[in-house]
Length: 251
Image (cartoon, rainbow, N blue to C red):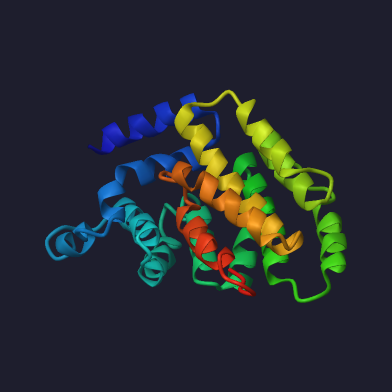
């Protein structure tokens, strides 16, 4: 089974064109679908009789986050930080901190990933840096726009989609350009749906926290939510839909 999973990871990564880390996350979420539904916690059932490997813990951490068990996932991610999967788990671990609303810790985590040797992980972390600035901003809206423009200066997207998201936050792009970039990417249908979900979360965040247009944000979240079945952003979009529908409430 382990070798089969590795083979599928390799095939998905080669076919998707979206980068090693993202392809591993997508396939992991495809493989743990039943766990995400929360019907049976195989991890709890197995740990008394089977030695739990880092890979099993990683899979369970993803399942816990997807199933809304973020505190449980945090414990596993903390334990994994001292294993050989430390690098592989860095991105979902940082996302988990956002789900726990530990924004300062999430910022530190994504700051580290932004200097990653893996271009796509670095670009993904840069977009998170912009989102976190928008989400936690306490000043005036026009000052936020100036701050984001300055922050985005020097950021370089790994691909057209990430560059379009960076440009959006920098005030020189648009949501339409982000999704046009996705459609022009030579990737599989699964990878394209994942990119649409990821981009919806970040573009929706711009609409919600920078443009102060909750209606546009909600429409975007709801439109792309069906594409998020294998996306690490799925629980974030679910939460965003709930909060964007309420008045005077932030994610």
